[in-house]
Length: 327
Image (cartoon, rainbow, N blue to C red):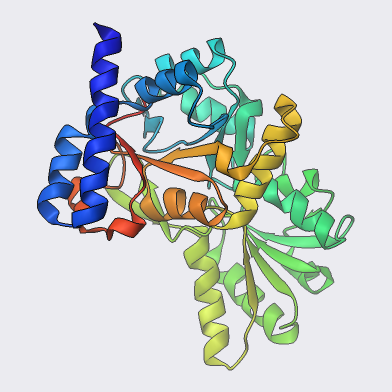
């Protein structure tokens, strides 16, 4: 009986995804959502993927907030799905734009929602600092960090020398936009004047997000991406252009970093980007980001993307796979 249910859900995916792409009418979009993909969970789809071996997918990348947890609450079927993937030896990692919590710290935060996660399976946007430092021959360079950058520090793990002393700012090769609580007034002014003196130097932005949910109160926090763009905007008014280097979703460095970890950790030296599925709740950061990096993208309807947003999204920007939840 269970196999029959999965068969009919997969059949609905095939039939109704074709109608949406062909007609591009709102009525079919709604029909697709109600009777097609959203009636199936990611776990059900992946069980079928493993059993038929025809999809070509070999690994999974998960967004965290809105996909696995919502604040301090687990999302339906999340732990069961992760247990299933572990049991079936499916290679997977978690991708997060949380740039100032180390993997151990992030795993601890996820555990408060009742989900057990191996810290070694968490890839932060700040992990991409290492690749950036290697490519640009920056190991051993002194860098200024606005705010926090994990404990242990991601920049230090990348072979850089972190600095938070404003009096030593001019000795730093670049600036990294961290997160957390710090003195915005003095830091922003000092960094702005640093770039007035050194416009050729770069502002590294691991987390490009403009805002983030501030707990369960419905309030929003100002993200590191917005802070970096604020400084760059002020400089632009002075006719000074600086380069912002983004590392996190939807930008390519974090996906390249994840592919490298998948290949090295699971011995998949021949793994190709199109063989990896990115599962997330955000059409831009997760889905568009994955596509731009050559990965497959799949949406879950448990986070920031509502049915109204999905219906209003052009057909070419919608993912081929849409699930009601992770499990």
